[in-house]
Length: 141
Image 1 (cartoon, rainbow, N blue to C red):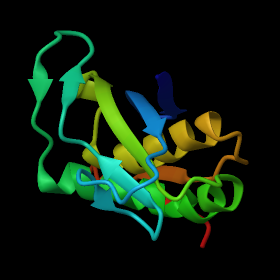
Image 2: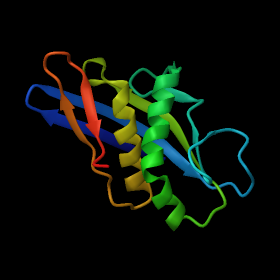
Image 3: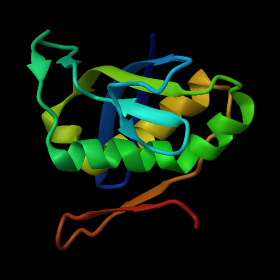
Image 4: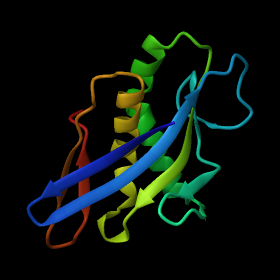
């Protein structure tokens, strides 16, 4: 299991999110897991809070952001992995509430995957609208 810590520090805001996950390579179609691509699946059914040890119930938006982040790198994973299937199981999150937005799950899991599979990291530029407080994640696409 690998832990990746996503950090952004800009003038006026900061984001932090740690994500611990592992990749397994089953030979048969996995029963658990949400499809991300033809061969990559996401399992976010048993996620714990790293700081407190209790189980986290991710909401549908958080799971969707994890899927989004893995979609950004799934074709690269499939190019280097020869296994019929790759299941990415998120095991724990390090969340500091004042530095967390659920949208950060996408670049965090993409960063985790880049480290885990030795991929070139996908750039994701983050900005914050000071008037509304909303964050924008730009993947240069």
